[in-house]
Length: 183
Image 1 (cartoon, one colour):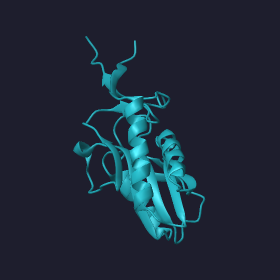
Image 2 (spheres, rainbow, N blue to C red):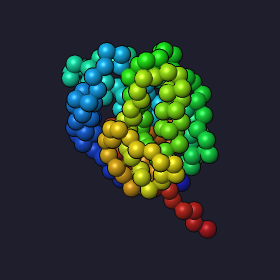
Image 3 (cartoon, rainbow, N blue to C red):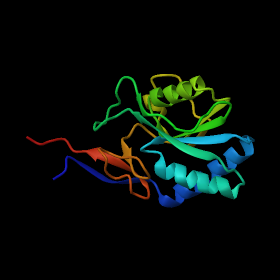
Image 4 (tube, helix red, strand yellow):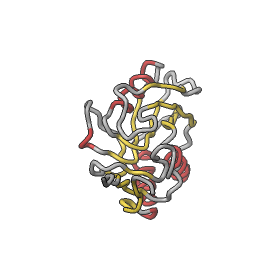
């Protein structure tokens, strides 16, 4: 038996689809750039980013797309002290208007480091878009420009988010409940 279960659906596929559509409309209305670059923070953002940019194209927004890998969790449920850029984006962001897309804004460390990193690479502007915001866990001041859902301090999986590499494929966001061992 696994020491956890993934049964409690917090956000349904329909709610996800509707909110991603709304976010694309918000971004299209707020970003006017002929040099727009959308950079996803892998691995958790890949499903959200794919849906988001598809909706953006329907709103006549056509960014260049790239990815970065920033390690924050490893195989645990608690973040490292300092996120690391383990794979940088390959697109030159000099004088570009960048939108960083991430799965979850938790402590704020990863998003803050990604923004600073892209500004240091010469981006004209850097905005942020997160699927989930978990303000109860914030350690450093950080607020996303575009946010899908605010959630309580629960460990969640699905729609790209994982627990030790599993459950990214779920079409919804679900709470992970850890089972206390019995003696």
